Image 1 (cartoon, rainbow, N blue to C red):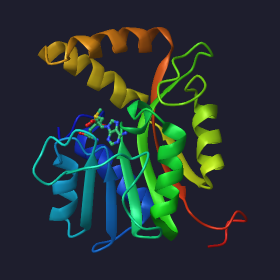
Image 2: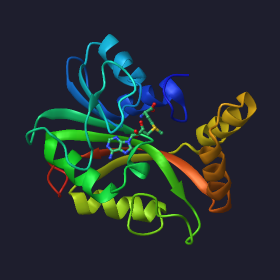
Image 3: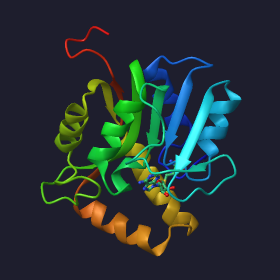
Length: 199
Ligand SMILES: C[S@@+](CC[C@H](N)C(=O)[O-])C[C@H]1O[C@@H](n2cnc3c(N)ncnc32)[C@H](O)[C@@H]1O
């Protein structure tokens, strides 16, 4: 498995397939952690910038996805794997991704959502249900092109972390809270285009 997100490399591949982006397209990874995914994308021939609040690898630059240091319309694609929900301001992160994307570009997201209405808000201003995500995407200006339920990958990630004993204490607490709130996992492709569907 690469990266600290459910589904590992296979999830990244599934997201890329949804986007239609081909090398050498420009990708900005938001919340890139140690840079495993960024390294994989580079090996495919993409031009990649990777930022994280706490970079944990040599190819990841310091940066805050809520206030990006890039000009508007700089990238063909933004990728956020399990990072927006914990970024401290999901609405701002979505608006910033929209700003730095070129027209016709896409935001690829995989992240958690909750089924129960008393769910944690995490980085959003209301409980992080699927409807909350949809509202956030729309408010930022995106058109939701495709979304898939990937809860099976979350379940596997959760069990694997516990089984291998490598889940930090705070993660175990989160897993417990998430389970009570009916946690699921999704992947989605959001397009920056005209509202009527024509780019
Ligand atoms: C669950 S980890 C996922 C890391 C990586 N995407 C992966 O799949 O391995 C979430 C990452 O988001 C980063 N992060 C949290 N808030 C952020 C912010 N405001 N701006 C940039 N990165 C942030 C954290 O430092 C952490 O590395």
